[in-house]
Length: 145
Image 1 (spheres, rainbow, N blue to C red):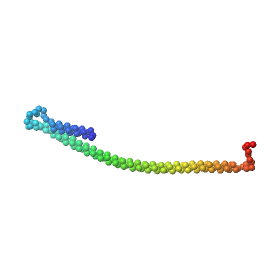
Image 2: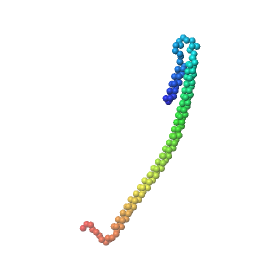
Image 3: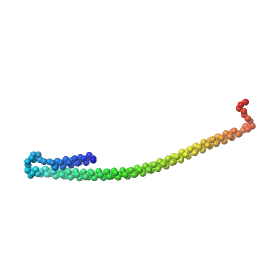
Image 4: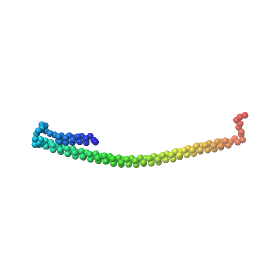
């Protein structure tokens, strides 16, 4: 319970307690007519009752506001949670698409390098074959005597 609500209750109890149990000093053995409040005491009692009524109204208003805010907070979280879940799902789908695209690009790059390597090997063999067949057909070179 918020601090101001507790303070309001304590104030209400103090006012109610003071007005309910307030007795003039030295009333031992006095007749009942003498114990009746005088004009100023009646005005003070009425003021205390009015203050109590005002504080109770304020307490009811604050409690209603607290309940409204609690309901709003509970309802707001549901909407926010739904929004976050939808965003999360959208991001997961986007991640899957990105992963598929990255895998396709890696495969394409592997194929390209395989073709470059194969072309290099084939070209080297062809150049070696052509150079080996050219020219000196009749001459035999001996490397060792």
